[in-house]
Length: 132
Image (cartoon, rainbow, N blue to C red; front, top):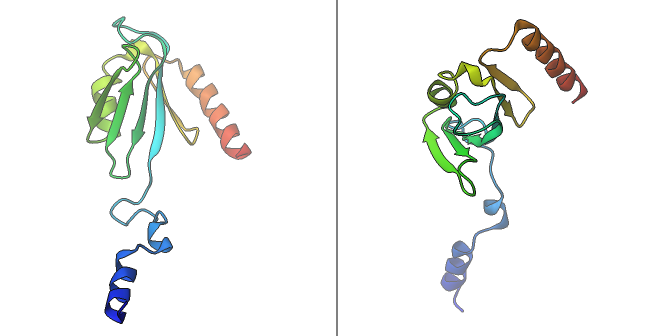
């Protein structure tokens, strides 16, 4: 085998370092964040109560929501941002008392929660963060 052929073969084979996942680029500074959406009630009677959506927020900021109903597959929607998802599917239904929980344990509550419930939740969240 000639030296030129050897060099071409080496260039065609990826090096192990090239296959290792890289940190996100400066254009996408964070990785994927997962979340669930739990409803304490269901104003429309369609999705049900409990965890009704699982989803991800991509490094680009786009949000992918997977409704767990209708079973067995549910449905999937893509939003430009988490804020767009919340504006369309969470805020219009305050009676659902919705809790979004992220993979790091952070929670956002939407709807008709009492101030006492919100305060209690904030103290629990701070305990979780200090224990981790």
